[in-house]
Image 1 (tube, protein in one colour):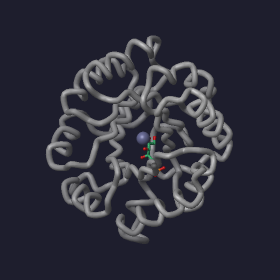
Image 2 (tube, rainbow, N blue to C red):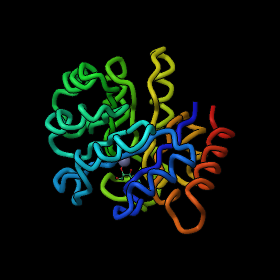
Image 3 (cartoon, rainbow, N blue to C red):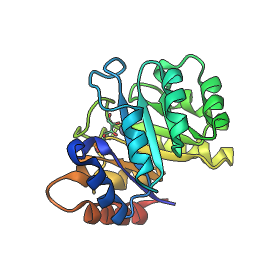
Length: 222
Ligand code: DX5
Ligand code: ZN
């Protein structure tokens, strides 16, 4: 199954409810919410109160991407919002199994993200404990960056590991996803695609952009 998850980071923060309505009409599969704390990454985006308001105004499942230094603290704020997934970064978590179990105990799917410099096997070791693997295809921290083609091999090795695990783990990619790069990621086995700039650009409507991304991903997926 292919999922397109628009990143709200590229939306107009002054008109979020309108942007979310547009994404509903456009059949977005999940709403990707990038939480940045000014510590794990330099910038600050928005916090749980904003996400709670968005969640109460839409039926689109919420995909929380925690780019924060102390994810175990933020999980306690985000879980009560009942998102579909909470994903934390492996680079900052010394007890990832414990945190993944905590997220699941709170009734939310658990995701683990790795930045470009983190090897695939760090994540592969955790596959039995998680519901989603997120491969960053840019350095985390901001939208509008260029997809790193070196990440394709990493996506593929995680895809293979998921297959041989026999578990149903989503494989998400995030950063620089557009009409051409989505093909590379889908060919490598990704099934869940975050896109900010490609969906909220002036060139086409979000609806159009999502349709085209979905089409490209479907025809390239393994
Ligand atoms: C980057 C964020 C992304 C970002 C993607 O650190 O995690 O979700 O919004 O934006 P684009 O699609 O513009 O690369
Ligand atoms: Zn993200």
